[in-house]
Image (cartoon, rainbow, N blue to C red; front, side, top):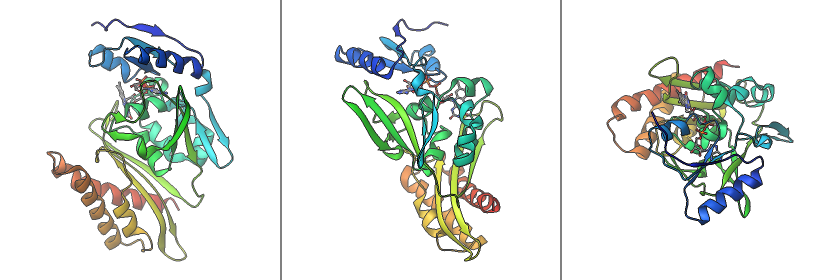
Length: 292
Ligand SMILES: Cc1cc2nc3c(=O)[nH]c(=O)nc-3n(C[C@H](O)[C@H](O)[C@H](O)COP(=O)(O)OP(=O)(O)OC[C@H]3O[C@@H](n4cnc5c(N)ncnc54)[C@H](O)[C@@H]3O)c2cc1C
């Protein structure tokens, strides 16, 4: 087993990291950021990625914080899945992200793998992404010209493709506090129990008004099913303003399945995924309503 030869830099600040990335990019070199390395080391070992320079940001301590600032929670990209799963702040206000992080890989992967790496790697199966989509998260990217902030749904261009520039770092994830009335759930279907990469996953948050007996609002995102992570808006529209009945749930499941096919086209996996998306949506909505 061998790794390609590359230079290695270990900056301690965002500014230094961006300067190093920018200088390399200007010279036409391929520079790549390393956080926990759980995705990257595999790519280096397989030589599917052959960089000139690896910029290890794991010592940039300013990127490891979880903070509440007014009506939002700011999460540093170096926050690991273990930190997300055990943070009281995350559990209390955005529990669905904690639930998603808890399902990632094994304890070793959760201890090393970071939220930023999960987002920037942009795997369709990434577990934190559907949770961040229904939470309306925003991402902060920092480059040589400063910061830019964009909604998470604008970050992805396709599987493993994002809008991040070669000399930019993901430096923050902003999660607005969801309405306290919301009830959320994260579901994951995988081939094996341990170390499982999601075959499909789903995040759902909703408010079911028990007095009026209608869904006031619903947010749904199914991972590994569409080229870019998106909200299942057709299913959301069917549920909103309607009562919690089997007929309404069936229609919502069907709408989600049809939206998936419309966005992905017919593929070899469609025969499996189409009914499963529908069932996942129905299951998630039921479980979220049962949360009270
Ligand atoms: C055995 C195994 C099981 C796994 N199971 C799961 C699972 O169940 N669910 C799941 O979602 N994932 C899983 N993964 C994938 C992986 O662990 C996660 O995606 C993890 O969050 C990646 O984070 P990292 O810090 O290790 O990223 P790295 O490997 O360090 O980086 C990943 C990518 O992101 C870029 N990057 C990282 N941080 C930044 C930043 N701040 N700014 C700019 N670019 C950045 C890197 O350049 C690289 O392209 C698994 C991986 C393995 C090996």
